[in-house]
Image (cartoon, rainbow, N blue to C red; front, side, top):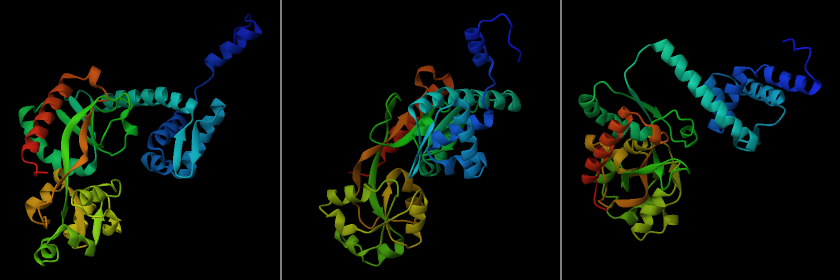
Length: 318
């Protein structure tokens, strides 16, 4: 672009900075995906790229802006202070652009509520209950996004998120949703063999636990006056694969009542003894967009809290 001839040198420099072309969108998109995921590998998979190709796009953006945006760590990446600021603005712009593009492509659509939650809770607890919500509110569409990260909550993409933990990240309103009771489960054959008569018998069994929640077995053991070290080693398996492994006879799993309920109802898993323990963790309902929530979001929240209260009445005694 040709600059006006009558500008002073200082004004010409400032004017040139204003009209300088933006970096390529694909480079900005690559940076936002990597910063949100905290992993180049995960971001590359999300965008359908190889890791080297993703890295080249991010490096081109850093060169264009003249400063590093990501710190490369032994395991993953994290934004630099300037990168975090850029992520907030660029990420919001990309989210808005995607939403606008989707709206044009899809045309008029029903009111929608987007919920992010861990995959196992979505499959075992929420999805079987959604038919009741749809029967009451057929005009509202509920879109589930299976995830267990906190990093995807700050972009305003979700009306709600359900996470397992003690506290929510700073700045995100949250409220209790479901208490969590943990207890051992195994396949019916093992339970019928008589090998599990008391909690102490677990020291002689192969034990399975959730990979991202190693505290559940020790928490349960201490509540029953057992030394957690006596239950080691514990094989870590994430998601519903944990319960599938137990149902296949691979060992005794520590189970969350809200997630394992379908396995108990079908008889694929049983409790070798009635010894549930209320965990210090609970499922919490996070509302990243609470202050500007829509009427469909408020309707869904009211219904969800009522469903959780109903489920709490039937929870096992601690």
